[in-house]
Amino acid sequence: MGHDAVRHRKVPLLREEIAVVIAALVPRGTEPVTGLASAACRHGETILGANAVAWAVQVAGDLAARAQAERPGGAVPVHDIAVQGEVLVLQILSTLAATDDVGGSVDMAAIAEEQIRALIAVGAPFERVAETIRIAHEVVVRELLGVAIAREVSAATLTAITVSVARATDEVLASLAKRYVQEAERFSSSVQHARHELIDALLDGRPVDEHAVARILRVSIDNYHRSFVISGSPSYPHVDVRSLRRAADAIKNRLGARTIVVRENPNSLWAWVSADRRLPADESVVAASIGDEVRVGFGSMQSKAAGFRRTHMEAEAAARYGHSTAAPVVDYARHTLPVLLSADTERARWFVESELGELAAQNPRSRELVATLRCYFDSKLRIAVAAERLHVHRNTAIHRLAALETILGHPVTERLAEVQAALSLLDIIGNPPDETP
Image (tube, rainbow, N blue to C red; front, side):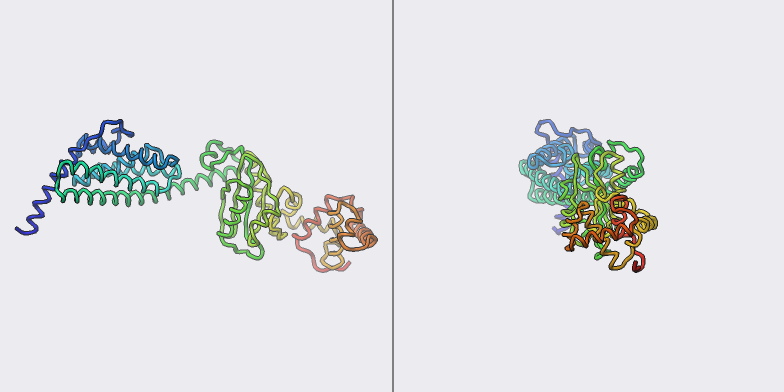
């Protein structure tokens, strides 16, 4: 007798023995986790039989309990694991029964997609799904082989069961992986879109639903908010994204709060931190932690929706001011006046020239007098302290102060705020050509 004839005789035998194994599948009687509610299960009953479907549900419940016991803190709910198990076990039984079950397969795929969406929504990685499927493979093979051996089927049938389960598991795993990637991309795109729309509404000052903020941004709008803008320094104008992200991580660690990126551009990164407590940022400490490649502008600490908008606008203004002064870190709260005044460069230049007169000229004598004036202010208007810091005699400092008042046209203390503001703007407006008084 030829090999083809033998093979044709073996195929009906394999099918008969597999049918016997499937018919012998019965649940152990304990209450299943999911029940027999899904369309896939009802459809499976017409092909596999009610007992086989009930057994599949029972195995899925055991699988879920085992997976949850091994990872009690896992993000995947027991019910979701059980439904995944149902899908897999019913697919395996359909493959073993050699059924061309298009309707059932489509329904099971739909159930799988629904569960995948739920897993992605809670942040469960695909490794958890794959781990569940591998455990299911182990459990199903052991259960089926146990029933098959008890029915004294042939070695060929035992091999066919093992191979069929492995093939069905691989097919389900590959299909789920593909769907997981597709759904994750769709979910990420939809989440990003919703996040951008919500942030745009906040920045526009439009009313927002605080529950939507909590769900989409995962923060309370009533929290304290602090925004910051990171960009390349003058030495590194085309800083790469990795450097921007490293700086954002350093700021997050320094502030001890979660960082949320709002916008990520080729040469800048715009983000904010949110917490139920105040988040002070020391300029010198932050500057030491971010490196020389980047510059940072901080908005002030604010709360609620209006504060969210305000701190973002302040951070943007602080970043512009920082680039003009080459300061590594600018905290809007500490530099409010010069930041505001420097928003309009032309008017800022008029203001500086009006307040400082010849001191705004770029020549050695003007620079010397400006340094003296700044030191005098830093010394809290104490001439002796200023002279010591300048390493000049006290009388020299007095003569310089007299010269300053002559140029200003009034005592230094008469327009104190205006003169100090003009000095802070002097470095960023661009000096006029060299003029010797």
